[in-house]
Length: 423
Image 1 (cartoon, rainbow, N blue to C red):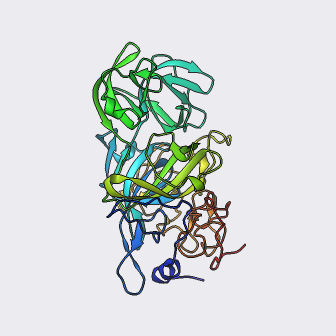
Image 2 (cartoon, rainbow, N blue to C red):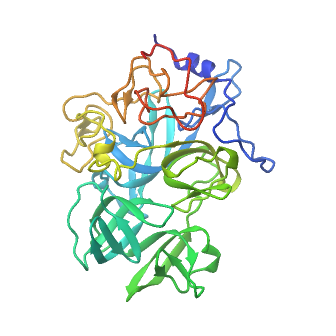
Image 3 (tube, rainbow, N blue to C red):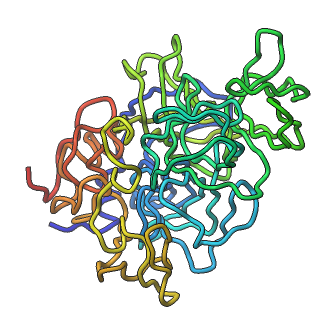
């Protein structure tokens, strides 16, 4: 059974159940709970119940190519997409599996797309210690087991680490590359050392603005012994402004008393009653309020590639060889770059001739980033959207994602009322 986009949106228009209850906000910070999680689709004035389309901020790891697949979302990009690595201009051929990226995606009838991709490293600098499945870089402990394209690193080599920070401060690397002549950099939550000096990890940062303590910051400079001579620093706890209506953020999470704490140091708000019982790697869907404040709407835990014995981001989300987890292939801009770690031109056919899927999450027969081709219908429980109405507590359930078979989504009842799906 197939559904038109308008009919689907009508069916989902009554959503009100969320995995996290919202705290009272300031005037003008009203958050509507009828958006389709992660897509940027928000309620609008259309008298027939359809919705407008807005921007969605996405922070997460590139798990596959053929467009880019981040947080289970397939995000297309044009041939002239702007790419930056730690704020410096780069090219699309420099995108790699395992890179942590930040994008603003917009939805249209054909799916999600973006005009800019920012690659974010958690630390860039010399290796000062090497252990089994561990490195130390600029005072940061780096767990290397889940990194894509692993290799042996030697003391003194300069590396650029992509990954997500755990609540204990350890960076779970998803990719490690030679740093070349990039400036030394560290990003993460700023704490005070026993003597009062600001630090990230165990790296002391004398001279850092004390207003950054307790917040996520990005600091660049020159290595001076065991310290970093700061050249530039900036607050990074709220990556998106109010022009973005919704966000999808991949992060390690933990309970911290009555609140949710992200290892990255990003700031979120949500109801303590709905916190997960245990922490782990999660994808968080949140609404963006005044001054970029993030209010969590749903949270779904996912398997950590480093703990599941898989070899890295490319293996964590198998979708099939052509055009998805095999980067390269042909797009509308002509012949893309083919190779083990290079993305090709966006859209079109991936290597092997497999057509790229640009449908919205949950569309009938969509691909499943976590488990191969989705079940017919795409809305069958427990994956995809949950009932009653709208994008319920489940959000996009791992490994179901785009209608694929998978565990119950998020926290709350698994979705019911599937249309056209096989159990």
